[in-house]
Image (cartoon, rainbow, N blue to C red; front, side, top):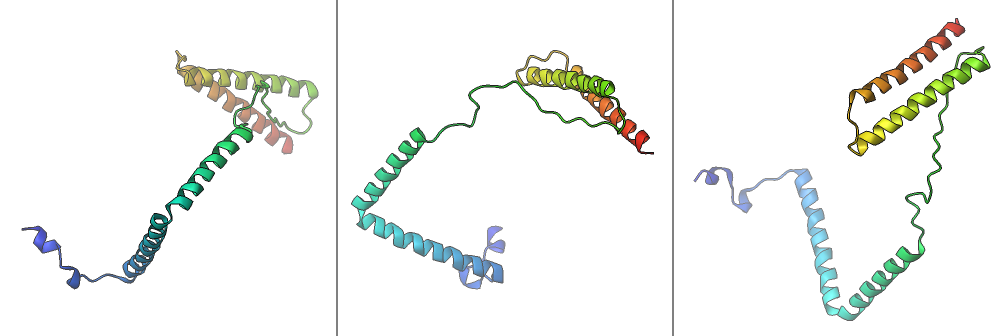
Length: 148
């Protein structure tokens, strides 16, 4: 009984411009579908032939196209760019790069342990992140100090 208050007969329904435009579009799509379905049902042999050719072409391309999504070998390298304040000595820069490399190596190892469910102490990951942030902060402060 309550539905009778909300539902109206199709002849009494009023729709907006957007509804009417999309309804015409969907009606045209339905008509195209009906026409193409009727053609396919009348021409079954060519339809099956196109299907078989598509299947054969897909299998052939699967065989000949290289599947290089995953590299064949791991080069075990990571490229990191470090910056320092102008005038930083070579030895200080080497020391800084070694520190950053060790932090990133430790962070990567912890992330791999976490990904494989082997990380026992999750606070280690946060500590390593803080150490990396500390190294970046020291680096930024050194650059600011040399710019003044």
